[in-house]
Image (cartoon, rainbow, N blue to C red; front, side):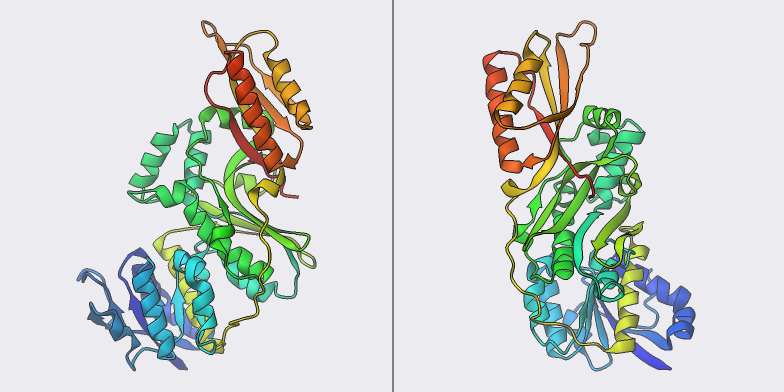
Length: 425
């Protein structure tokens, strides 16, 4: 029997989940792995007497976690500067680190992974909660050449879009409910604007394609402009709207983007609802593999944290500090995809023809179109079109031209909504 002594930074929901799992399932972990987990130190800014520390010494000084009676440091405080200092101190003390800090890894992971390469860092819990997607890429699927990673990797966005679709909730109501249920922070900006998903996609792209973590190369767009009308029209066209992260190899380059997308309604990924996360990995030998499960929550994330702890205790593996080679990330203007456009206009003859002509002028083919009759008493109507695949820069120019022409005709009624279509092929 091998005893592993843990030092935990933080007493938030994830840290409390770690303590709870060890309390509930420590015996099972010991029987299955031969590893006995013992929490020896906990450090947090605020003491929480109601939390059972399992006999650990409590301190408000994070430096206490690099003491001799700690074998592995669990960084569960979040943020960047303080967490980074703690991880660097642990590595300097030759103590392996497990972290759930996606922002830190996406932003500073290259530096942390290239220092003290014989001291491991693991961060399964930084992406997709309880889903072992990092382990799958680094271990189970390591013999594969990866082509594409596509995922629903933010539970808040997925909850909001599901509520808007299935319960006819306006965006503001769905967001408020997500906050009340603890799925969204009081300041939800990182979630609803796509930043959280971008952190996670940065990590997945770097691991799958053997490149450095390049957060600044990921195109980011949130869900704040999605309306109930878009969801309704998407369903009529055979799609569901999800917030996705897409990373794929195109020739010798990498494409990485986070944004809302129309997914074919029959696709597995399109039917992942609520706060759940899911990731589809496409590779040469294994083909398409789908990973799905809870993407957030204290217990779910703690499950991944402790999975990393046991893996470290079993193997004591070192990490790869410099195998990732720089590659070019494709600019968003070069990305090629189909598009959904919702164009609110005054109901006048010739308006649809103007839309079609503008698309034709930019060599954009229309695959499908919807033009509703105006509601009684209204002079306005939505024109909805789906285009064939076209470069992003061409689509942007076409939309700008269309705005100008509709303005000249004095028929425009609000801005044009554009959402990319992801075929998952």
